Amino acid sequence: MALHFLLLLLFAVSFVAADEEPFIGVNIGTDLSDMPHPTQVVALLKAQQIRHVRLYDADQAMLLALAKTGIQVVVTVPNEEILAIGQSNSTAANWVSRNVVAHYPATNITAICVGSEVLTTLPNAAKVLVSAIKYIHSALVASNLDRQVKVSTPLSSSIILDSFPPSQAFFNRSLNPVLVPLLDFLQSTGSYLMLNIYPYYDYMQSNGVIPLDYALFKSLPPNKEAVDSNTLLHYTNVFDAMVDAAYFAIAFLNYTNIPVVVTESGWPSKGGSNEPDATVDNANTYNSNLIKHVFNKTGTPKHPGIAVSTYIYELYNEDMKPGPLSEKNWGLFDANGTPIYILHLTESGAVLANDTSNNTFCIAKDGADPKMLQAALDWACGPGKVECSPLLQGQPCYEPDNVIAHANYAFDTYYHKMGKTPDACDFNGVATISTSDPSHGSCLFPGSVGKNGTLGNFTAPSMNSTNSDSSAYKFSSDLRIRSLLMVAGFLLWGVVLL
Image 1 (cartoon, helix red, strand yellow):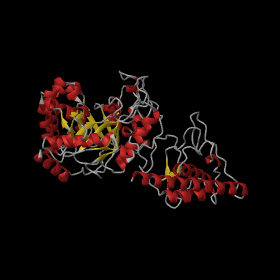
Image 2 (tube, rainbow, N blue to C red):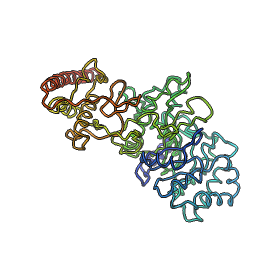
Image 3 (cartoon, rainbow, N blue to C red):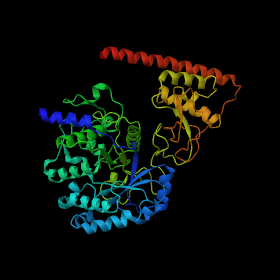
Image 4 (cartoon, helix red, strand yellow):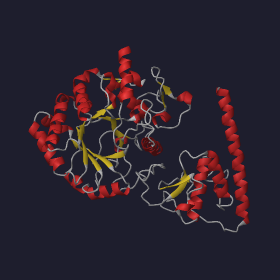
């Protein structure tokens, strides 16, 4: 046991992050009754500034459409072709010639997935999986593309047993005859372990043991965090726990420096009667928080600061997918390119800010100082002459009653009143411009397109209106009092906990 933990410690010290910056990509499934033309798909990718995609095949038309876009592409050897490729070096060479060499470098192919979840969905092909991977890699070497194009195979997280606490995790030992040579290959070629992680299924199958907030990346109080009793590391979400479980499972087999890339993760926006948590709100919360988690470079408790690049499952809802209703509803967009929901994103650049109406909004920056937000809110509702009455109790934008939500409304109203100039969305550095519509419920922000396609109402107050001035100051005064009471309450709560 002492030797095992020494190896784990050595792994933690020697782990090296991948060279490139962490990224968010998307998976592109094609089980749609009205699949968009490849040029339409690429147009959507460009509009959303998506720079990384994973295909479940190597469709020639899609690869041609992706040419000269700079988008980094992962192609896939379909599961049904693995047996043939795993038994024939020439078959593998032909596949690489037709699907990679013929398109590279115009199409920026960066990796090849050899199958998907082969060990759990196609066990009869498991015995030739590593051979198929090596034959594909040999074909890349012969074409001088082995440094540009990595080779791996996506694994289901279900092959990791005893996954909590993460430090006790190990791979299903019956799969070691495949996993050991696979890890040998990944380490020797500088490739990465591809892992599919679905906190939705972990939550659904836990019979209430896993809290929904823990699955959705929602903030948890310290006493609700999961603690690894061996390492004393605190876990605030399922995703990080599963990634670290993979790292510990790799180390358990005495391998180091094999990074993890999450090839699939997401949350369904709709489900059957037995899937009550497959909702638009939960899907939006999970994917928004996942994107922010990756771009913030939070990392995991085992590897803080080392973010795990992730491909969201998936770009489109696939209405032809077999299985329960949720299987058809993992997409960010419908077949027409209309977003299923507007992701709540700030500070993540324009990547997947999936409001296709081209509207912009001014909102509070993530992590902005609450006192500075309060001061900016007071100014907007006072000297800034913003009509803040919708934020009063009983009005459409009163809830949620916190300084961030109220600042969002006041900032955005001022921003639109001033003609959406960049200078109008600064507020001493606590505001930022976003393409994600912050409207919620009956609270429509200026410029927002409501569910019925109508614009949110916006009336700029008269610049010399004394009535709006006085009501704004009264409102901001009330808000300051509530803010002080809130802070006092948190301080008292902290004293009680201590």
